Image (cartoon, rainbow, N blue to C red; front, side, top):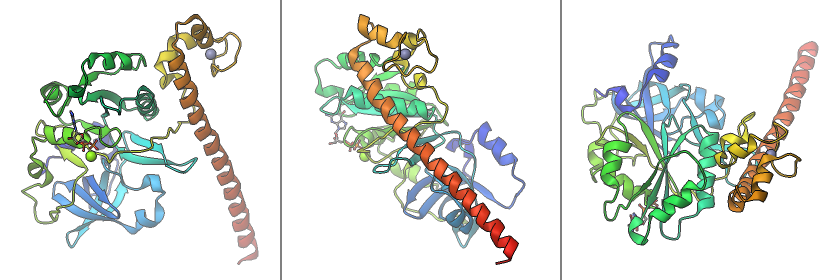
Length: 354
Ligand SMILES: Nc1nc2c(ncn2[C@@H]2O[C@H](COP(=O)(O)OP(=O)(O)O)[C@@H](O)[C@H]2O)c(=O)[nH]1
Ligand SMILES: [Mg+2]
Ligand SMILES: [Zn+2]
């Protein structure tokens, strides 16, 4: 039997589950998605799963199951039909590439994100900031990993670069090639029963790191040997892995774009900690730090207390957030107008009985 807490089931999920009265349904975690084929891990072991009609026809894209989701399902003929997604602890999203308003969910129920950059040509402070800003929007705690430390003479310099951003997050120097930092990750950073996600551009070493953490023993974690037979074993490649130390790791394919979204009503200071102390002195509480009088951030920029590079990064990224926000508002307003029209049409139809 698979013990659900081994797969990250916690108080939050238990409470939401207890609110359900339908005892007929089983609960499991989505560990892999390939097109419309899902794999769910539950007390029945690993099962192939599909969407039930309810989700297939009734759910918006962001409501569909994602890797990391806890779902309610019912099994028929060794296929699990996913009926409901339990409320999420959080969602890692990005702006859907090529679209202006919609956000795409990458994974859910994440405790920490491992943001990886390679110390070869990949290192880019602006891109790292982009990840950290978006994680702040999603309220997911970041851990920065600077991999390929074997390729540079003085890796500590890069740690100092990251500190310039003033995000209060741990930074680890690693090399999957020499093994630098691996023991520390396994023994003290990654905690049992917590869910981590690997993010970073393609080629930074995400899969290499995962393999090191798995001790190259993917088989052991890929299958649950004592399934009751209700669930069917699959050989589908997984996206959520149970590591030998008991922590859970979601691997993602490299993301070429990582566009920012914005949450309604969230202050930008959450995402830009480097500005925080200066923004506290702004005359207006809703100051955007662009051309306002009495702006503490602009004053700090002028006096040299705030680095121009960091300020520029703020301008670029916050503009991107606002663009998303404004477009999303437009969309919502149009949606409301449309909703009103349908209501009127329905009322009319009722009145005249057609
Ligand atoms: N020099 C060096 N190369 C590495 C290190 N980690 C990964 N690589 C290499 O970087 C390339 C991309 O690694 P991979 O794990 O596939 O990256 P992913 O796309 O992020 O999953 C491979 O050729 C790895 O051998 C490292 O610590 N040092
Ligand atoms: Mg990879
Ligand atoms: Zn200001």
